[in-house]
Image (cartoon, rainbow, N blue to C red; front, side):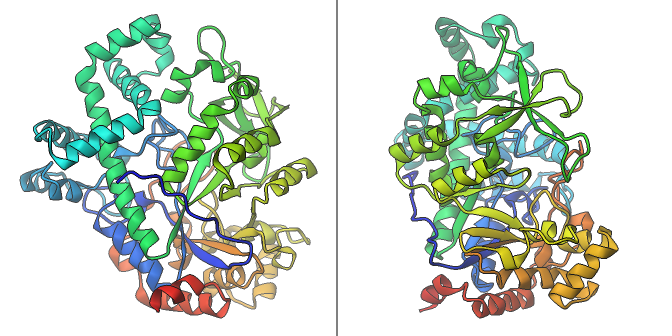
Length: 515
């Protein structure tokens, strides 16, 4: 267990398709999707539907706003995804613990209630884990995990423990000996908080234990998992707290500039993300060691990496700290090809997809193409503009990924209902469809593309409206909560999707599996 799995990338000569859905959306009786039985059933559904790809969002522990793009660590796993049923199978919680778990909303994730209930259960699992025989296989695996992952786990567990000690406050509000501790102060903190630190390490072990078992199940069925690396990390994270010299911070730890994007399709005032920006000169001096560790760690979790906001490696939008919008930012140079050259020299050829949406210059295209990273095409963007544009299917090239929409878009049906009449007419004319079948018209158009890879949000397969949207950029709350129920995974549509997948020659691996 916990061996790094490096799989070969999807080649430029193969055609694949898959489904985008985050595990939090799975059915479960515990208020949030998890890595238990329903996750395995979803893998089976992918096989039934003839799919070979499963795309997820970042797996990190989420903070304020519940966004997986604002996590407490770029390396840690989301404790809320741990399956209580799997803990029961390991003897770490009792049947009465499960029976007494509160009844929570089955149709959406209400994070406050889930966090309260799940953390109580995880606390019991941790206490029972501490009672295990030190010679048991599970404890041996735990010790091996802690040793292998120490490069991030030690700082993460200490960071979270100090955060608990400070009632969850942002680390910039801690006292100096905690906010910027010396090595000796770190040792004193680690000693005084050793029980809480052990808790966080055990919980991470349990997450990774469950995730790797699920990943193996998927890989054994020839399903590749696409994971997401956000280019930036959260200010309130162990990454920034433990590596201040790698970010643009002042002497007190506050950002001098923060990340965002200028006004665009999603927002007239841009998007002010607020993430601290990297000090790329500092990263270059250490030969991009932190980034290499990050990529290597992610490749142990998934088979293909999608890098969010790829354009930021060429140039990024830097907004002075304290601004209320992203309007008054400036473009700054990123590491360009130096980072990816260092990653390639260290790890070899890496299966990376580039999220190259937004304002894309020739320099960004050159950076993407130098490493042969496939870029993204989103069909909603193709038809949002009534004029001809490079998102249109007849301009697609094999080395790209076509999406009907992403986690940041409305569902295809919701988008169609809310777009302009000119765009609706363009859809009907191009796809030869009416409004009633628009979701599947989008899916058909994507699958028929010359693009090697196609990803379809599960909501489109279910032909769902706007209330199933996963995220609305710029909206402060109500995001990341969409869930589906067992009855929603209709086998009829799985069979129809498989039929289309075979028609457009995207089913070779599953044919091999059937033999």
